Image (cartoon, chains in turn red, purple):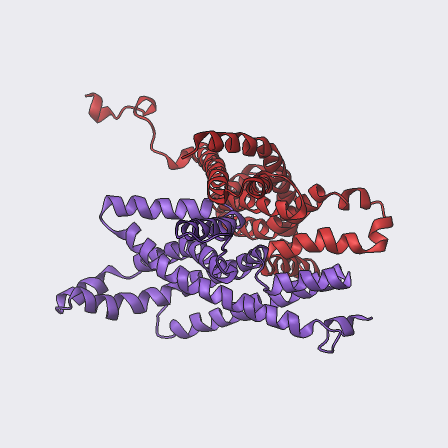
Length: 241
Length: 237
């Protein structure tokens, strides 16, 4: 074992972690907004909006992310009209293309999760809110949103972790995030095993931290499902006497 | 040149090449599915076992293969595997670089990833078997082998179909990443076509459409299989 090589590789790979995190955070952020839009469209009455939302999900879940990424980066970039449009400063940059592809991809999966979570809100609770005289907005803010958020978290945490793994594809459009740097070090040193194992470990720890953070959020959001701690419990008269 | 020529089957068309790439994608994914089902059964067995060491090994396997990017695992198997093979060759006094076939490395890497997902599917399917049926099998005097073959396997396969359909879709899409090792699958074939004709949009759209065809047809087949496998099952809802 060459610990000097392992530690220098680790330090170089950690230097690329900010780019991985940046891609991930932007993709998850914009993806969530897009997903909310898709969920809203899906819940509309009529045919056109739900149909469009369904079609979007079908296309993005049915094709590999790599095809979507190449279609945006190489495909759109090869069209003259795009090169002359106001979008070119963005679509010229591999970074924005990667964020766009990741966000559009995760939105398709997340919108299905949100749809399921929305369907899981018991109608009785919405009815109760209306009966108390809450406006539609208040019902959404106080009842539907908190319950749906709590429902969506476990599945959504899986999707978020899939996203950290998906950022690795950005290395294929010339970005030097963790996988890209690993590939570069491997090309320079020919020590594939060590480099990829260190890179894998970084992703593993990152995903572990994200999973723990979301589990903590889930715990915080579901006090009603936990046992009351002994110190806060109202004493049972039978025990006191 | 117009679209029909470049996508067609004539001398200047890439139609045949794309179809050949699609066949490779299908074969790699099938190989990965089979490797994954063998590994997945082992993982499910390890996680269900009463042995603590087996539990930990099963958990570690799923954590690692689901927590590391697929691309990195493919790189690890292809470049890492080639480094190991070259190392062994050098020990026997052979010179130079020896790589392992991209197909083998890709099918193994995607198969092991698929195995981590299939393990969970089989575990869930085993838990879904009614306990009374296992007790009944023991009560009529079946030994463990017979119980496994007649009671457990048929029902696990039935309950696993929907989950297996999902992992198959993942495997099909993951197989596109094997193109980075130089395996000429649908992804690689369309990238080569796009590069040589400079029609990136056309060929990546075509690749997307063909992947969509693969995923939607197999989704339909899995649905049909589920309907057929559960035809004798009474549903509570």
